[in-house]
Amino acid sequence: MDSFLLVGNGAREHAIAKGICRNRKVRLLAFMSANNPGIAELVKKSGGQMKIGDIHSPREVSEFAKKHKPDLCFPSPDAVLAAGVVDALQSEGFACAAPTKEAARLEWDKSYCRQLLKDFKIPGSPKFGIFQDAKQAASFIDFLGGQVAVKPAGLTGGKGVKVVGFQLEDASQAKQYAMQLLAARHGGLGSIVIEERLEGEEFSLQAFCDGKRVFCMPLVQDHKRAYEGDVGPNTGGMGSYSDANHLLPFLRPRHRDSALEIMQKTIEAFHKKTKNRFVGVLYGGFMATRDGVKLIEYNCRFGDPEAMNVLSILGSDLYDVLLQISESKLRKAPKFEKKATVCKYLVPEGYPEKSIADQPLSIDYSAIAQSRADLFYASVYEKGGVIYTQSSRSIGLVGIADDIEKAEEIAEKACGAVKGRVWHRRDIGTPSLVQRRIEHMRRLGAL
Image 1 (cartoon, rainbow, N blue to C red):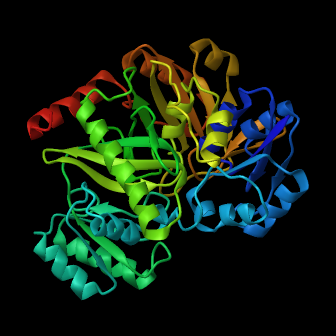
Image 2 (cartoon, rainbow, N blue to C red):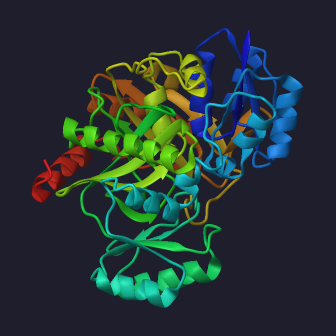
Image 3 (cartoon, rainbow, N blue to C red):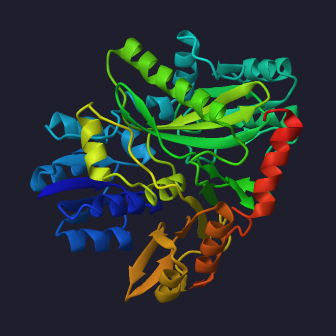
């Protein structure tokens, strides 16, 4: 019986664990920073082992691996990859289907990523500049007419980017924010990236990558803004949807093909630059604009919530796919069901600014089962048989159906089966929201 070590404990990791455990010949090992009840249950059912510790400690994770000897390892969250956990496991002889710290730099250093694309003439980058000096950053903001996005170069949990016209009112606020980021070294690096503001529709393309080729998963659209109507502060993602044809209603095949080409050229460029290969899941955040597809940023792992959408309809054996990736010989594109999905995140009251934590949730599991939705635990804990909220997103609920509208109805019904001090965006996946996306692209002339 093979064993699989998963490092991480969010809803994304719960989705990965569910996918792995569909193969009943695999024993799940889990190293978590907090006890995810769903992952813990899967560990127990598979006859595996788990430990609560510092997931960002290469030494602690390696010690756990040496004790239980997994056949395959999958460190998942971005900060875990940036900490070099994969490198430590590989140095002990363990196979990994995730990128090394150097390869994950595509995510944890946005300046490195932009420079790589520029050096190898890869299409898809907006106009950008990399700065360590606030005055130079301010001059570049003026050069771009004040219509910019300001980004910390390092990791910020998906909440550090601010855009003029959304989180920032004007160029003056953009300059002030750039100054604040540089002074605080927000994201852990001493530089920021200033980019031209793009107009279009965002989409997520996740791909399995064996170091040589990228294999496309169904496209997903995430919703970062906290409140209905796409307003409010940025979050880690309030929910997402995918379509049965694996595109999105506001996109055409050419958009997907352009994004996939950018990703393929990126891993080839990384190999040319470093002589090493990118192995794992590469996820590109893209925007379809009037001038074509533009890369917003890379993530070197599954998305959260996007992992819940795609892994819920994965028809291939996830363990087998990841094993082939680790051996750099993924033989064929994994299969996905021709189904639409809608994911809605239940989050604590006050999220994302001042979450009210430690609140009990009453979950009607039979009602969720009857609605045919999938449930994924995120930032929660279990005590005395009761699930309690923590400060971040609590539970992801995914509806699966033949079209987005029906999938949304399933997800919404499932959300109603969870009672407590939590809330969610009801508009995600609704016909009116999807139609606004289509009309936006038509107005831009991007369809």
